[in-house]
Length: 299
Image (cartoon, rainbow, N blue to C red; front, side, top):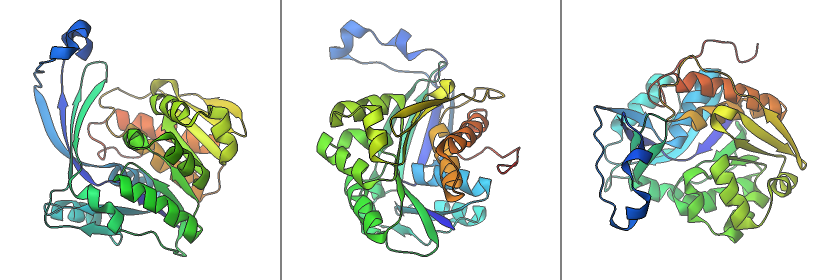
């Protein structure tokens, strides 16, 4: 069975700042902020939430179907998907704009500053979710605002259970819209910062949200994650990485593992354990799609 992954395909320009952002930004001078960071290393990677999640799921042995929109410069990404054996049957392309671009700067403490140009992603609502006997689960990852709203409704109409993963797209929606997403979704996943914002905007606690879906997962970075089911919280401990090199795409790697487990009908805690393990592999490599698997996910 396949997982339909609604989200972005993007080119990531990743830079490393060898200092700390906090030491370069004066809190009492934010109203006249004018700061420059020297970044000795720079590289370009294939990225975007849909691409990164698909990469993780494929690596684990699943069948990802990314649903996204590329721009006029997207030919290289299509070739990339083909080389990985990932179907591009749900990937569209528009010729009058660029593929989404993320400029990501990471400091020595793994804090990140990102500038994101959505480009073709803003046309992602042209792709439509429909009933498909191959698809057993879906996910709504950060994407164009209209696409996220419409794809959620289309998942429901098609009878496909899905994960709501708002990520950095969460600020685009008000409390009523976020509540509607939760009520439509089967599972919800956020990081700890997003989780606080989600609770604040909806007026619901994590326990409340978990009672409206089959489960809520709040990832905590180096602290592992919290799995909430029916109002009860279980802490899933982290997996120590071989090295901490680059956090870019760790959350997406985790979500690919989540989809793999959900496809297998695993309990949410077991899915989270696999996610923590894959996230530890990813953070030890530069870029969101350059790590490899060194264990059997079914073992």
